[in-house]
Image (tube, rainbow, N blue to C red):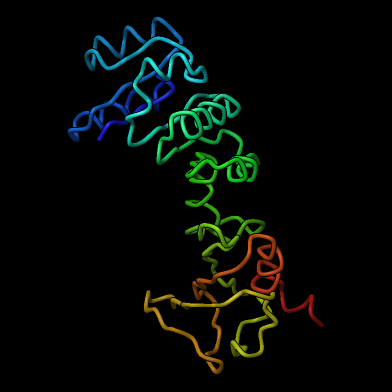
Amino acid sequence: MYIIIVGGGKIGYYLAKQLVEDGNEVLVIEKDAAKCQQIADDLGDIVLRGDGCEGVTLEAAGTGRADLFIAITGDDEDNLVACQVAKYKFNVRRTVALLNNPKNEPIFKKLGIDTTVSSTALVLANIEQELPSHPLIPLLTIKGGGLEIVEAKVPQYSAIVGKRVSELLLPQQCLITVIIDEEGVPRVPNSDTQVRAGDEVVAVCRRESEDALRAILTTPARETQ
C-alpha cells in the first residue's frame, strides 16, 4: 500500500516508522528542512521537502497513485486543504486528517474528508466516565446517517435507576441497543429490562440528541421531583 503522510513532526515520524516496518510504501511530506533530514537519517529516503497543500508538491509525490493520504500537521486548515487537494484533484480514495481542535470536525465532514482523528477526543474517551459533565463516550460514527453509537455509565444518583426501558423518554431516533452490568455481562434490553446503577448503556442516537440523552441518563432523582 502506498501511503502519503503530510507532516513530519513526532506523530508523523512515528507513524511513518510503524507503517514502513509493516511493509508499506511510505512518503512523508514536510516543510521543515531539519525534520526532513532527521526522517531521512533514521528511516531512509522516504521524505519529500515541500508544502503538502500545494498541487505541485503532491504531484511530485505521486499522489495520484496513493492508496491512503494522511494529513497530520499542527494546523487544522493545512490538514483540511491537503486532504481536499488529494481527494478532488488526485482522486485519492481515502483521506485521513488530524483534528487539533475537535470543534472543526463538522466542517471537515461536510467538505468530504473521509476520516478525522482528534487527539483531544481520544483522551476524553478514556476519562469521560470520571467527568460528570461528559458521560457520553462516542464509539462509532455511522457514515451518512448523522448517527453515532455512544456509551454511558448510569450513575448511582440517576433518576432512571430502577426504571424499565419502556419508561424512559428517549429522544427521537435514539435506541438503547445493549446494557452491560457491573460484572461485565451484556444483555439486549427489551421493554421490561430494568436499568440499574452502574450499568453501561450503549445507544444509537443522532448527534444533536446527545445532550438530551445525557440528561436522561444522568439527571439526579431529586431534580425530577
